[in-house]
Image 1 (cartoon, rainbow, N blue to C red):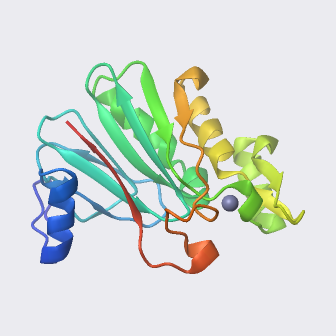
Image 2: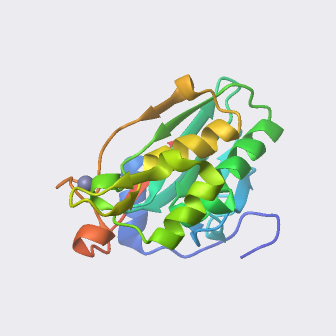
Length: 206
Ligand SMILES: [Zn+2]
């Protein structure tokens, strides 16, 4: 990886072709680690392959992407033309990835921010350890506590994402949710439900 400039990273030809079919711009994709690092994308393809869980940009000709299975992809945009995308699993949300993403967008000039929560595992399918649930609730409130269809303690990932975005200053009325559970949906990949290796791609571009 380069420092401060556009990183040159080899991508398999079939992967490159699939990306072009979605949007024919250089993708800034990330090596996601369930952390809170956000990269700023200063031009097409900048920071591709960087170790981070979110990307923001205000530059034309850019495409920024995260890959998810059960974690939530969060797409963000502001009227000022600043966009962001974040990979928001419970560890990343607790680490502050959404606060950091909103903060980076603001530093690029975003004022009012709209967000969309993409397909992710929902509480009914997401049995969660009591200790980890306490950790998330301590950070984001008891609204993240839920139960599975079988009555076990569960984490409500969309509620955790909403709580984090709201605490970062995003107006709750500007947060939309596609309301798809990856574990229930036959049209989405789920690691938890089916040990699928494939991932959904959430891509924003301008
Ligand atoms: Zn489900």
